[in-house]
Length: 420
Image 1 (cartoon, one colour):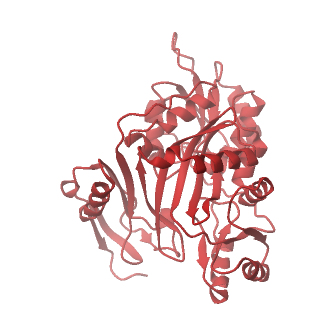
Image 2: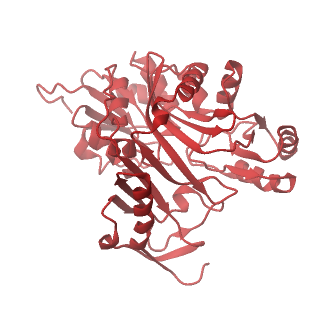
Image 3: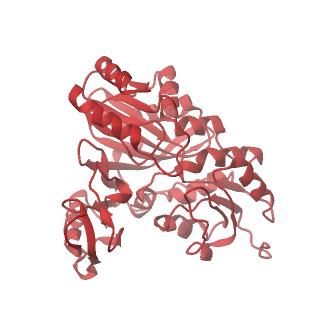
């Protein structure tokens, strides 16, 4: 496709649209950038449909293969200003392609350090960044020995997955084998090859959990969105919701800023956007993980709706070597809640009565449909467990929480007979 004559927008390559839940990215960015989508890969559809109105072109290519993407980018007409991906499985290959074309990026080794949680742990430990004690293990006996050294309770997690897949807590030696098997057995279609030491046994950090979506330019880390995470379904750490206050004092907290800066320096992340998860313990902030991309679960959209900068536009600007716009508007509170059945169920009908949604509701979406088997964590997680989500915007935290509670009345589930 040729470049429209006189169109001054920079050409930005996006690697994988992931799913329609990310349409807000394209809505925000396409008015300011010409978007070319690279789509396809193992376990991922090659079809491009809903994305088309936002694009000037697209290429079907294996987006897990840096060499294949390099050739695809080389064939795009006109100069490419930048390339980015918010898809965890593709951020490392995307960094390789960016480096080959001299486009703004953190070093691929730094992105890989974020992708592999054990490499993250080693880098943070070497730099003295506060974090959970962690041991990589290759079997159940090693896991038992590591837990005994660290002290119960412990958290077991896969080394290189995302979205809390396979993460669970073991309170004692009797609970460790099941937690180890959950971490060891969970897999995703596009997960990297397994490591010999593919499970981490970690210290359980007590205290509220937050995530920080930040922009990194010239090695300087600037927080954009602080999200307070709600979790449930112990011993799993299922992410059941997030709350964002654009006036959150943590955005200017010097201790948090120091930990974030030290963590990014430790892994060598210099350019792009990140999603860092931390717990505020009695001893201060401690890092759970750093992801070399914006957060999922609609967190960037929550930041925008609450009155903060638009993280997607910021990500596009940094990827194209431009100065990002991080000004803030009127501060409000935005949140998302994910709704689950009372127990494992096969869906007969699932309906959303919009008349019953509270006035604060911004968006309500059903996430499954008739005939689907929905399993509660830890048997299912994230994509397999949720019936719906609702996003709401309010003037206070209490108003927001009340609205998200009321929104449950709009979701109607009828099971399909007895479970099979």
